[in-house]
Image (cartoon, rainbow, N blue to C red; front, side):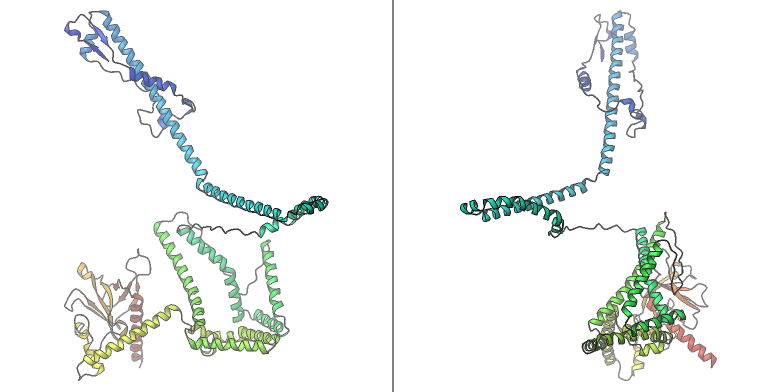
Length: 604
């Protein structure tokens, strides 16, 4: 609003000019038409607790901001020229106050509307969570499809009935003759049909063909706790089977002499008198009866081998990231070993029937032909008696002797020899790769010998001309000519030497290649052309050798080998070795051979 004109200009006509309020009045009229349809404002929470409200918007009492007047305006209001001016100024201030009150009222209504919107959104979200709309929609679609199929079937049945009625409808003359009989049969047929449907309708409906519904099983995401729980469930589920196998093995090993003797006597008598099958059925009934009593609360424990109770670790609620990672690794290792054993058994059975090794499958082939001919020409009682006696003697006596005498078992136990000699698929792959590499080596050795000087023998030739990428082997490591790498490591193993006695970073870690000879362990550095950075260790001087894990953070058992010698305070570590296990076996076997030869020489 504006007060004008200027009072100091001396204009006698003093009046007040008020700004148009049409837009404000229209807003108030529209707001009066809107009525709040929820609870009263007092029923809601305090506006200060609303998360969307600011500090200035949440208070119930909003301070009024009265516009400040300038000295000039105060002088105008104090002008004693006439009392009308003061009255108009007071009217202007009252109008400002009423306008601010209305604005605050509008603000309150807006806050209430926002609160109503917020509460309605929360209720809508809860309703969506409680009622799964997608599942209801899928179920509704299925019901619609079933209804359409039922309607089609009903239409087909009605159509077939109308066709049958039209086909069976007799002519007019015959209809008049049989009119009395039809009337009598009309009351009897519906009763028979109704009675038949009540008695056998349910069974008829069971034989009705319906299309199979393809159900997709939801896969659970990977979880360390779920994986551990499944492994424990598998262990608990397989416990009865493993305990049964242990008891059978204990019977065969004569762990309890009295129990094994009684079982052997009872079994042989049952087989001799033809009661083997009734005996096994009676044992199954006895086992189920004992299980029933155990389920009813009886404490019955019968086992040849004493059961060892394993401590059950309570599941931890809060696990760190490293504990979860280690838990997953342990469970994965157990699963890997279990699956590996099962795969070995299945692959051996498959290779036995697929003639992978003909000399083994041929024995099975002859045995099956012999069993077939025996079943054709001999009575079943005699065949069963022979098989039962052989099984009892083999289980209770022969296996006991073979387990106590491993050399005798390796020579004469035919099933054991066949099972041990059956290869798995990885073994077959290794054999084929070894045969191919052997062929390549023979071809390369022939070409190498043909290119060697004519006056050298084979030993001199291999010892003199074998070398590394930088030169001859014995010249690089200052060794004799007869020292050359073993056949396993002719090209060496890529690795890095970690010498913890050195403090310089360039000497602390060196990249290179590791070789093993008959008497030495040689490391060739890849950065320096001189032999000062190379390392030669006598196998006799090694005091300790073991597998080593350089970084404990990484999973697995590591990729390093630690070698201790008297000349070094800390062990030398050959890390980052891909073929660590092969290198360790080679070094350890050669080390044991050298130490055994040195020990025998000192004793002599």
